[in-house]
View 1 (cartoon, rainbow, N blue to C red):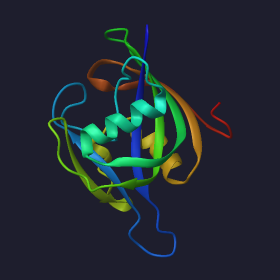
View 2: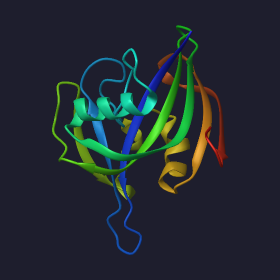
View 3: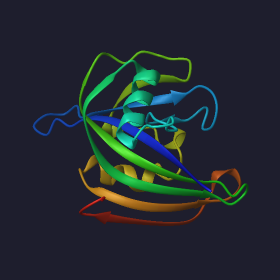
View 4: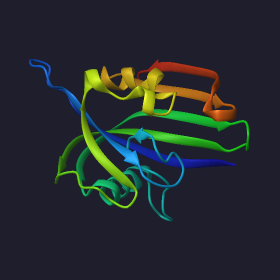
Length: 161
Protein backbone atom coordinates (compact mmCIF):
# COMPACT_ATOMS: atom_id res chain seq x y z
CA UNK A 1 0.00 0.00 0.00
CA UNK A 2 1.20 3.48 -0.92
CA UNK A 3 1.91 5.94 1.90
CA UNK A 4 1.08 9.57 1.15
CA UNK A 5 3.74 12.04 2.38
CA UNK A 6 4.68 15.70 2.01
CA UNK A 7 8.01 17.46 1.56
CA UNK A 8 8.54 21.24 1.91
CA UNK A 9 11.54 23.19 0.73
CA UNK A 10 12.21 26.86 1.34
CA UNK A 11 14.29 28.22 -1.51
CA UNK A 12 15.22 31.87 -1.65
CA UNK A 13 16.22 32.62 -5.23
CA UNK A 14 18.06 35.89 -5.64
CA UNK A 15 18.53 36.19 -9.42
CA UNK A 16 20.43 39.47 -9.56
CA UNK A 17 22.98 38.61 -6.89
CA UNK A 18 24.93 35.71 -5.46
CA UNK A 19 23.48 34.05 -2.41
CA UNK A 20 20.47 32.00 -3.49
CA UNK A 21 19.92 29.55 -0.66
CA UNK A 22 17.84 26.60 0.45
CA UNK A 23 16.77 25.53 3.92
CA UNK A 24 17.43 21.86 4.68
CA UNK A 25 17.17 19.91 7.90
CA UNK A 26 19.44 17.27 9.37
CA UNK A 27 17.12 14.41 10.31
CA UNK A 28 17.93 13.50 13.89
CA UNK A 29 15.75 10.41 14.36
CA UNK A 30 13.51 7.95 12.54
CA UNK A 31 13.43 7.17 8.83
CA UNK A 32 16.25 9.00 7.03
CA UNK A 33 18.15 9.91 10.21
CA UNK A 34 21.61 11.33 9.53
CA UNK A 35 20.65 12.87 6.19
CA UNK A 36 19.90 16.41 5.05
CA UNK A 37 16.38 16.68 3.68
CA UNK A 38 13.42 18.98 3.27
CA UNK A 39 10.65 19.08 5.88
CA UNK A 40 7.49 17.05 5.90
CA UNK A 41 5.96 13.70 6.62
CA UNK A 42 2.69 11.89 7.05
CA UNK A 43 -0.75 13.43 6.93
CA UNK A 44 -3.00 13.39 9.97
CA UNK A 45 -6.60 12.26 9.59
CA UNK A 46 -8.68 14.92 7.84
CA UNK A 47 -5.70 16.90 6.50
CA UNK A 48 -5.19 17.68 2.84
CA UNK A 49 -1.67 17.72 1.39
CA UNK A 50 -1.06 21.44 1.87
CA UNK A 51 -2.38 21.40 5.46
CA UNK A 52 -0.14 18.45 6.31
CA UNK A 53 2.87 20.07 4.68
CA UNK A 54 2.35 23.32 6.59
CA UNK A 55 1.88 21.51 9.90
CA UNK A 56 5.00 19.38 9.44
CA UNK A 57 7.08 22.43 8.47
CA UNK A 58 5.95 24.27 11.58
CA UNK A 59 6.53 21.28 13.87
CA UNK A 60 10.00 20.62 12.47
CA UNK A 61 11.29 24.22 12.10
CA UNK A 62 8.98 26.68 13.86
CA UNK A 63 8.37 28.35 10.48
CA UNK A 64 4.84 29.14 9.32
CA UNK A 65 4.30 28.86 5.56
CA UNK A 66 2.04 31.64 4.30
CA UNK A 67 2.31 30.78 0.59
CA UNK A 68 3.17 27.43 -0.98
CA UNK A 69 3.08 25.85 -4.42
CA UNK A 70 3.24 22.18 -5.35
CA UNK A 71 6.27 21.52 -7.53
CA UNK A 72 6.53 17.77 -7.76
CA UNK A 73 5.27 14.28 -7.08
CA UNK A 74 7.85 11.59 -6.36
CA UNK A 75 7.15 7.89 -5.89
CA UNK A 76 9.70 5.84 -3.99
CA UNK A 77 9.60 2.06 -3.88
CA UNK A 78 11.87 0.12 -1.57
CA UNK A 79 12.54 -3.35 -2.97
CA UNK A 80 13.86 -4.70 0.34
CA UNK A 81 10.59 -4.21 2.26
CA UNK A 82 8.02 -3.43 -0.45
CA UNK A 83 7.19 0.02 0.93
CA UNK A 84 5.95 2.64 -1.53
CA UNK A 85 5.88 6.35 -0.70
CA UNK A 86 4.12 9.00 -2.79
CA UNK A 87 5.74 12.29 -1.81
CA UNK A 88 4.20 15.64 -2.78
CA UNK A 89 6.91 18.30 -2.97
CA UNK A 90 6.06 21.91 -2.13
CA UNK A 91 8.03 25.11 -2.50
CA UNK A 92 7.40 27.56 0.31
CA UNK A 93 7.21 30.93 -1.41
CA UNK A 94 6.55 33.04 1.68
CA UNK A 95 6.79 32.35 5.39
CA UNK A 96 7.03 33.89 8.83
CA UNK A 97 9.36 32.99 11.64
CA UNK A 98 12.97 31.84 11.86
CA UNK A 99 14.19 28.24 11.67
CA UNK A 100 14.61 26.59 15.04
CA UNK A 101 15.88 23.12 15.90
CA UNK A 102 13.23 20.59 16.92
CA UNK A 103 13.42 17.08 18.35
CA UNK A 104 13.35 15.69 14.82
CA UNK A 105 15.23 18.18 12.64
CA UNK A 106 18.16 20.61 12.80
CA UNK A 107 17.54 23.25 10.08
CA UNK A 108 20.38 24.99 8.26
CA UNK A 109 20.58 27.35 5.30
CA UNK A 110 22.84 26.29 2.41
CA UNK A 111 24.05 28.34 -0.54
CA UNK A 112 22.82 26.57 -3.66
CA UNK A 113 26.44 25.95 -4.71
CA UNK A 114 27.05 24.12 -1.42
CA UNK A 115 24.05 21.76 -1.25
CA UNK A 116 25.35 18.66 0.61
CA UNK A 117 24.19 16.06 -1.94
CA UNK A 118 26.60 13.44 -0.53
CA UNK A 119 24.74 13.57 2.79
CA UNK A 120 21.23 13.47 1.26
CA UNK A 121 19.02 10.80 -0.28
CA UNK A 122 20.61 9.72 -3.59
CA UNK A 123 17.49 10.67 -5.61
CA UNK A 124 17.86 14.34 -4.64
CA UNK A 125 20.63 14.80 -7.25
CA UNK A 126 18.07 14.03 -9.96
CA UNK A 127 15.04 16.14 -9.06
CA UNK A 128 16.38 18.96 -6.86
CA UNK A 129 18.06 20.76 -9.81
CA UNK A 130 14.65 20.89 -11.58
CA UNK A 131 13.09 22.31 -8.41
CA UNK A 132 15.83 24.95 -8.16
CA UNK A 133 15.22 25.93 -11.80
CA UNK A 134 11.51 26.47 -11.04
CA UNK A 135 10.43 23.45 -13.09
CA UNK A 136 7.63 21.09 -12.02
CA UNK A 137 8.24 17.36 -12.17
CA UNK A 138 7.08 13.80 -11.57
CA UNK A 139 9.46 10.98 -10.78
CA UNK A 140 9.72 7.34 -9.73
CA UNK A 141 12.66 5.77 -7.95
CA UNK A 142 13.24 2.11 -7.09
CA UNK A 143 15.66 1.60 -4.23
CA UNK A 144 17.54 -1.61 -3.48
CA UNK A 145 19.76 -2.54 -0.57
CA UNK A 146 21.74 0.23 1.11
CA UNK A 147 19.50 2.82 -0.61
CA UNK A 148 21.06 2.21 -4.02
CA UNK A 149 18.85 3.46 -6.88
CA UNK A 150 18.06 0.48 -9.12
CA UNK A 151 15.80 2.35 -11.56
CA UNK A 152 14.43 5.84 -11.99
CA UNK A 153 12.28 7.92 -14.27
CA UNK A 154 11.94 11.68 -14.00
CA UNK A 155 9.91 14.00 -16.21
CA UNK A 156 9.47 17.73 -16.30
CA UNK A 157 5.74 18.50 -16.50
CA UNK A 158 3.54 21.55 -16.99
CA UNK A 159 0.66 20.68 -14.68
CA UNK A 160 0.60 18.56 -11.54
CA UNK A 161 -3.17 18.19 -11.31
